Amino acid sequence: MGLFDIFKNKKDSLTEEIDEYNTGQDEKKSSDSKNDEEKYALETYRQLKAETKVPCVKMELNDDKPSIFESKVGGLGYIPHNEKFPADSKGRQLRLLAQIDCSKVSIEEFPKTGLLQFWILNNDLCGADFDNNTKQDSFRIIYYNDIDTSVTENEIKAKFEENEFDNDEMFPVSGEYGLIFNTDEDSLSVCDCHFETKFVEKYNQLNTNNKIESYYDITTDIDDIDGDTNGFGHKIGGYPAFTQEDPREEDTSYDFLMLQLDSEFGDGKDRILWGDARICNFFINSEKLKNLDFSDVIYNWDCY
Image 1: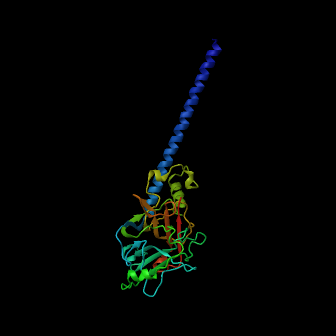
Image 2 (image 1 turned 30 degrees about the vertical axis):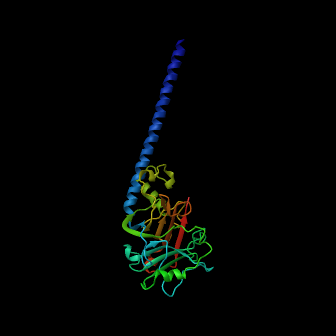
Image 3 (image 1 turned 45 degrees about the horizontal axis):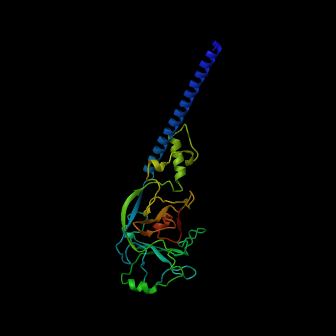
């Protein structure tokens, strides 16, 4: 081997070492950048959780048979002596999805007394009109402030009329369940229509050197860091969950989650099942809720 070859081999070896060093430095920078992103993402969400806390009431189902005057999911709802089951424009009776004894809900915007009812048609869309999600035809919101306790369950049963869907098992609730209410707090969910804007603003305030334009510009999955970000569960108030997307726009006036019912199944029993197992939501403007105006409500459900 000549002197030239010796120097050439040394040069090649040195080049390889430099390349390996540069590669290592690039990997280190990438790792450091990923760690910084995760750090800022976690801090962003930690601050958002603290800043967006609102009261909510979370609910649990129980197997006690509630009366027609109590909170429930499914079953028979209270109907005054002189009224009939609510029906759609084709005369088909709606079915009770949920009834809330408002005295059990400790949220400022919510009625303090009376019964708030959610009725839906038991067709293949569970009464939803996805082209006009506020049209109260195949769903209905009814509020009774004054309750006549002389009404009987047998009297209401006598008003029941079968419709064409009663044997198709499309109604999301299987059975009838009481409700247990737990006062709690809720923070902005990743599903909420306001989440991305608020997250990007906060993230860019914290990470001024690497600003983002969208939540999806980061690779960190917030839910992997903090599993309590998605908003699922039965509740009144707080922030919603979706398997698809929020039907509201960011400038929405429907700012209050009046009811959210999640799917609940297991142990061989499907208590609530929305499609292939997901969730429904009802939204209202908080001022209209305070004024007991239930004429303008969004009803939405989605699944995988």
